[in-house]
Length: 427
Image 1 (cartoon, rainbow, N blue to C red):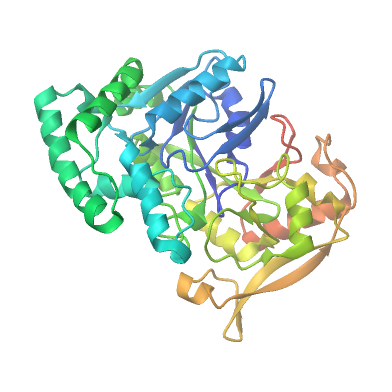
Image 2 (image 1 turned 90 degrees about the vertical axis):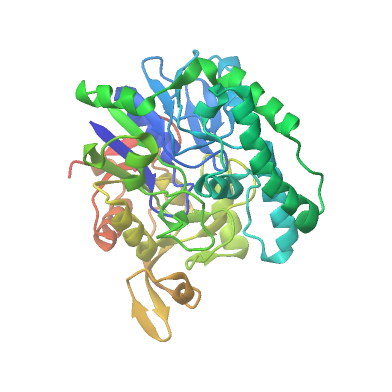
């Protein structure tokens, strides 16, 4: 069976933990989109890890970890991650890389930084990982597929020459930066070839056979619904689709094979980077939640930037779950809220004097003000509880209130960062 694990909101929902947990009973885990611009934090018997390219199920010796064709593949970062986990005692994972995946080039990273510098105060808050320039090239049909590393030298150098002719115009006239050369880019590609060659595979054929054999397959998404370029808070979005539907494309499987969509939802809100965030809070209130949140404070796994904090947003989450096609909600970091006497929950947006529960387009979102309902807190530590009925009454009330508001079943409740700190609900 194929299960997709995706985020309902702005990312940072805890997808890494849920993937790591479900991978225990899975055979194959696939990253199907995004690049090394966002990290998934994992805490398990080997320690604490921030994965940026490797799938979060890589810690089990019975699993195969796949980099799908939809991923922005930064080969040096992938291999630094492999080396890092091996140095921390993790058994060498079985890894496959799609021959149709495209590669993040060093000049993509440079162009990302140059453009943010040029935009200055109007920048997009990029992680400067080269993601937007990479996907721009992919869809402009001037990117480099892994398969092209194995082409003959003359044809590869001919393509490089055509690609960098365009790049050098921008470097010279827009950014006033050093120009690229054919030999420099070719040498980089040959380094990448040597690194990735042992792992290259026709992933869609591999998965076709795996599905026929009844293997349990996880699709691991990056970021969340609000960062989808079509359905998110455009233009402050990422450059690849963050939706479960794209899992079929980014992995190379038929869409009808995705039978279960686990959408990960945080018990409060957080976001890294710019963009509309209606339930955002500030000052001491935000600082306290940030300090207590996550698995050691709410800071970006890639950038280390303090995350923007907010109360739970039912409007954004209902929309985020709907657009993902959610079958199950995994509700995370609930234990963090145990210090609060009262917990505000955003249940609607006021726009031009009218309250709505429907998530609007960005132009209207800019005018939205949160409408809150305040629930009593439970004022206790819930870590270690394994049975739903053993949770404090106000804690259960909080879960059930949100479940009713968003309209999707909360079947898993995470009450700690550890792999097995999870409560299953039978719905």
